[in-house]
Each structure stands twice: as C-alpha cells, then as structure tokens.
Image 1 (tube, rainbow, N blue to C red):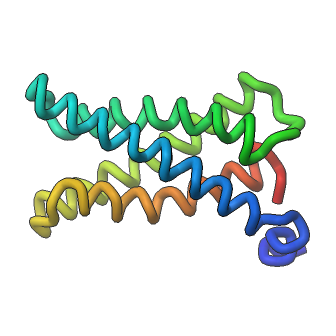
Image 2 (cartoon, rainbow, N blue to C red):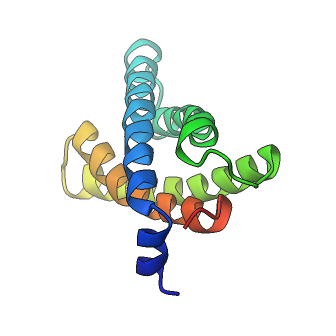
Length: 136
C-alpha cells in the first residue's frame, strides 16, 4: 500500500494536526529558551539553537506519547531513542539551513529558524508516524 493510502486509511490527517499543535507549542518553548540563552547568557546562537531544540524535542516526545501517537505499541525508551534519532536528523537539517539562511542569505534569526523547522518538521513527522510509532 502506498504512503498516501496508508496516510488516509490510518487517519494520518488527524495525527498530522495533533502533531502540528504539539509542534507549535513545543516550538514556542524552544524559541523562548533560545532567546533567553542568547539574551541573558550571551550564548553562541548555534549552541542556543541546539539546546532549545533538544529541550523542545523532549517536551514534544511527551506530547507525542500521550496525545499524538497514543496507544502505540512502541516501548517508552525505544520510542524515545527513535524519536530522538529522527529529531537529530531534523536538527542537522535545521542547523545547516539556519546557517545558510542567516550567514549567506542574511535572513533574520527567527525567520530562518521557523523556515528550517517547518521543512524539517514535516520530514520528522513522517519518520515518527511510519517508522517509530507505526501509525501510518
């Protein structure tokens, strides 16, 4: 069965909406942490983005387990390991796109972070829905 058919049959649109809501909430936490770290500690922007991403991702996993992909048969720790692995792939993309947009294209930091996250987020959702939680 194709991904599209599995997406429709498995209620992928509902999962996608739930995941988007969870992503927006945890992304706001991520952005707030980045801002705090850079403003009040003078932390390097790439380190701040990495810390914000990892903290936000841990919050997102909790929401994914409890709400987005509830009733998954994936174990708690193996699920987190796969979730984190998928997130780290997303982080590599985010940091690369972030550097490209801010350093080479002059895009403002927040705009670059949001743009990179939107693209990476869709890819990570697909990996979690299909490989990790096996709901699509």
